[in-house]
Image (cartoon, rainbow, N blue to C red; front, side, top):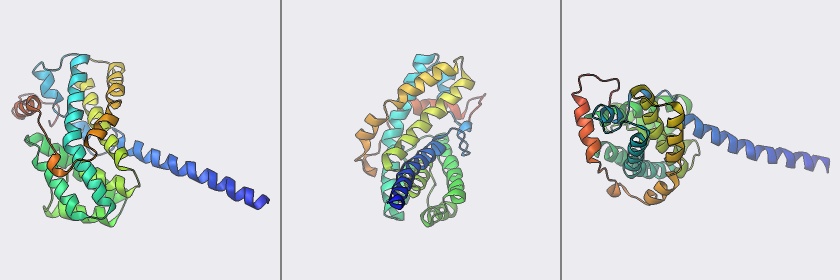
Length: 245
């Protein structure tokens, strides 16, 4: 009888520990300190500030919300498709999602951002995850057969770690907002209190955004954001730049 109780307690403890380990994996890959070079990019914010489009907390919040919506309908869809393909070890669909994500970015700097961060994430994943699917994808990235974008790398790694597709989507969305708000602290007169308030509000939209795109296919990916594209084009030839985009 005593032995049975001991086994029951051990099993009860093991379940919550598995959940906590999964939660920490989510935190690890959502962390702005993840060494993939996100600090080098502003996702168009630098140009928006230089051109006066963003000039205070309200306009910053509006741009971050716009950027996360755009991310959801473009890279978010690619991530969802790639994550589900990774569950079936379907490398062909993963490569198709990777190419679609890259090709639908109009700006040179946006393409630079996604492949720089994607390849760094892939290298990191090879060190800490070490799965055949990730290795196969990275082999294609290194050979030039596929670009190696960030959302696709994130999809493969999170799938391999047992993170659900909706959670992987949330990690990606959080990363977009956190990148821009971190850049804002270096680019404009705003406090960390204001940026954290914006981040909390933006995070509250992720469920609705996921519901809007969860059933999307690669042909549903869209990237209509003309102001952002114009600002990105202006940034390429800007005389003074702190960030790569």
